[in-house]
Length: 287
Image (cartoon, rainbow, N blue to C red; front, side, top):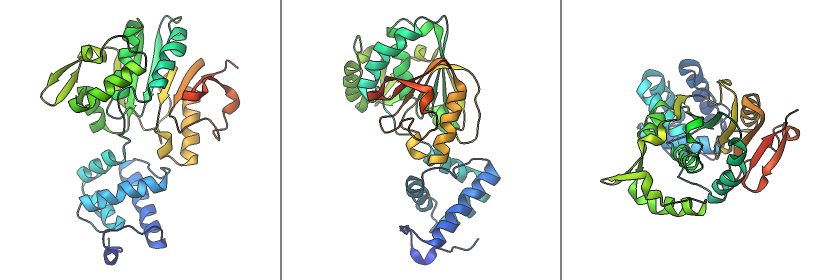
């Protein structure tokens, strides 16, 4: 395929018909050849990440990136990691975890068995945070966490449970602000520059690949966490994911979204009531 954007160099245009066409062709090609559907990701963020990959692959245009990807599955995997939402941290947004501990877990404690879905789990920090919370509230032995992401490489990283040691000071503060009972240091050992999280925290966790853009429901859940993922999708994909979560929640099941996300515009607002609107936790009503 011709390098249509070669004369522009590696700096992306803010807008433009040629780049728009290249972008559409790239996303269509990825979907048709590899089955990964990024066509409804929010374009501004998507463009930035695609252009970083253009440079990293030594190309000068989105059309050039498409040529590379079509002929090199490994390049596709590198791009897939780039397009995965990997920004996460342990006990991110401490008021959320305090609310989860004080308002949600007491309800879940009344159930004999609980299924939780952490959708778009990225490198797993939120999964381990939740596992610690469940252990401290005495629920770990009757909760199954399904942690999913679109990237196998990201999931493999999550299963390792290794966190940069220099981040643990901030994570420890967030843990305590979120109502942590002890010190976070009891849940990891130091290995060089890494904090290796207690492997028993994974005992109730199933890591699996799931694509929110294309895959359907796979179980019924009492709690779904999908925080800071929907902001990367356009409105139509956000609505799809909201319907997916609605289909996946048990009656009175609870949905936790990110600080910049809500049910507004989903078409499902009247099916939910706030548990804690401040931190975006909602409960699906029975009828």
